[in-house]
Amino acid sequence: MIISKDQKKRIFLTLFFSLFFSVVIVRDNNTFNICLHIAETVNSIIIGFFGIAFMGYAFYQALMNDDFFKFLLLNNYPKKKDSYLEVINDYFFNYMILNLMIISVSLFFICIPKSFMKYIYFFYLKFIFLFCYMYLSINVIFEMKCFLNNLYMIFKFYLISKMKNNENSPDN
Image (cartoon, rainbow, N blue to C red):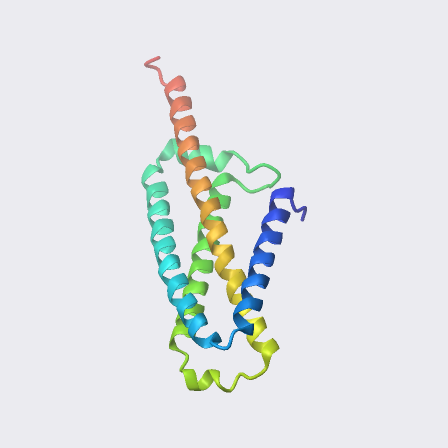
């Protein structure tokens, strides 16, 4: 798989911010309370993103008609063998699973009793757990930008398929 320059930049930024926030938080004496506050905030944001993504997919399904379906099915995504229909549906599914994963991890953080956290003395264990959580959280935020871009692309494809349909209609 070839990674584009934009993808490399995104991966680097996500890793950098995850690493930075994890180091700062783990070194603090009040790590548990900071993690709890971050988990509550991230959970609120991601639940909103989940709703936006679900609404976006409903919008996509509302646009679906025979002509639009054929257009998406017959045109392949650039540099892939899959049709636009397959790519859009797979992307939506993967994004929703990513949202559900981060919501589950956030709820785990929120529901962990403080007494349990006392047993995690090992600095590196805290760091690894927090780093993974931060990486997932930041990745979901970046993915929302991609999701909105895909919605724009879907609307554009819908208009193209409608124009092609109007060109082929006997009324013109």
